[in-house]
Length: 261
Image (cartoon, rainbow, N blue to C red; front, side):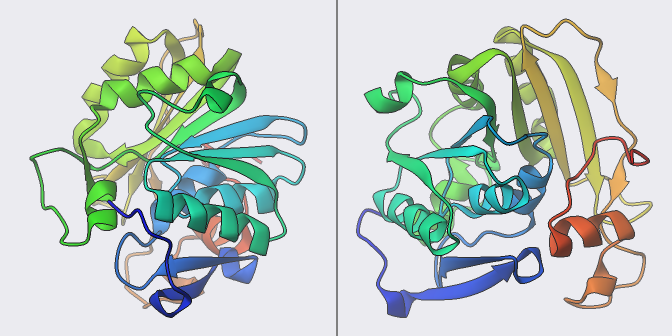
């Protein structure tokens, strides 16, 4: 677990959203990739609403969302003090304001418990503790496999939501049944599922799942969306399909309905 602040020599500054956002990240440790960008793009927020990210890391998703939707109130919770400090720095350096609390989502800081939000978003650890590969670096390991069970993440999200607010998660496809069950247990209904395919014809690796507090609408299985074209073209704009080129490089929203205008 990363407790001490990062020295500048241990950081890189990386462009996201085609350069609209610049993120300080550790050279060694957890580095934000595709997941936080997609998570942020999936939030249907508007100016004046509030969002809380559980396990915000260095704040990549918060910065991407804040850049796309000016006027949203941004907040994050991060258990590792070093990453929480990095998230605050990234918000400030991207001319964004927000609160980043350091603490455990099972027993969060009292300041956070006193508030409620229109949206809660999270990218929980990929694996349960004791399963999958554990990275040597503590920060990266915490991001990949966590001690906190998935149902606790969902419970924390439900507690912090305003009535009729939305919780949105991005996670590996293997954990979809577990997440859906936990969301129903916490009265997060009107579930919407979006599988994300790395390429056409491949099985999904990730999925987005959105639920509404006390929602009573039917379950919606959206048409899976393809991130990359069939031919690998390296780290270039041509390496994304049209929709995801706009999301990853242009700061466009990711609509669950592929043909939504």
